[in-house]
Image (cartoon, rainbow, N blue to C red; front, side):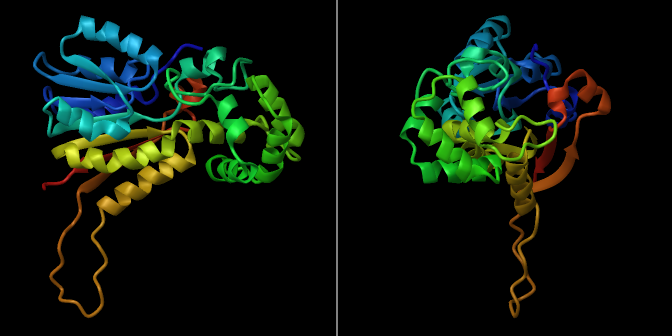
Amino acid sequence: MSHISVLLNETVDAVVGQRRTGIFVDATFGRGGHTRHLLSRLDHDAQVIAFDKDPQALAEAAILAKEDARFQIIHASFAELKTQLHQLGIEAVDGIMADLGVSSPQLDQAERGFSFMHNGALDMRMDNSQGQTAAEWLLNIDETDLANIIFKYGEERYSRRIAKAIKAAGQIDTTAQLAEIVKVAHPKWEKHKHPATRTFQAIRIAINKELDDVEGFLPQAVELLKPSGRLAVISFHSLEDRLIKQFIQQESTLPEQEWGMPQVQKDTRTLKKLARIAPSSDEVKQNPRSRSAWLRVAERLEK
């Protein structure tokens, strides 16, 4: 299945607003769909900087950088947003967008090891040039820690049973092996969902530190945005969406007045909540992988 950018128009519309120029960030380049559409909306003096950890995404981005002088790519996690932009001499930007999670090409390439739908080496690293593979990680992790991760990141109620089976299996080299171990250990399958879905999600999130990166990214994004600058983030599962929702809620709400304190209250809000957008029914028909996506948009208030 080819990569189709989710909520493409909605995301770029949200980030750009009425602007035709400025400095914009795509925190997750992927295969460049959102970035290319963003560039098509901007004038010749605009600048777009993208981040990605995936070597294949970087190769795609290098091609775009040769085609369009307004664009440049940074090989880093968006958790390094502030440091990397400051190294470029950039202190503030006009808009930031991020499309979280794993991309269709990553899922569809068996050798990347993200999916039980395609048998391949059990890897799961978004940046497969460094760090432990999922196979190595599973071999080294303690059973209790593994159970806790499957429960926390996969929201899997049978996490202990599954962790016990995984550790009992010893070396697991392929996605098919892991999927079968989980399938056998799982006592109750959800309708229309493979029994290994939640476990694969949990392991992927843990290996790539996905939620840690999101938690690090959000406050940096707010700090870097100019007044009226927009933040637009697409998430695909409840754990990510909850983080984004809670962060925007926290940054767009006045602190509670302490009882007995003077009524003069310092306004510490940094964001204005703008929208929560789901894919249209037409988009879901054309791209079933978009069905769980949510786009949340917020605007930077005056500093």
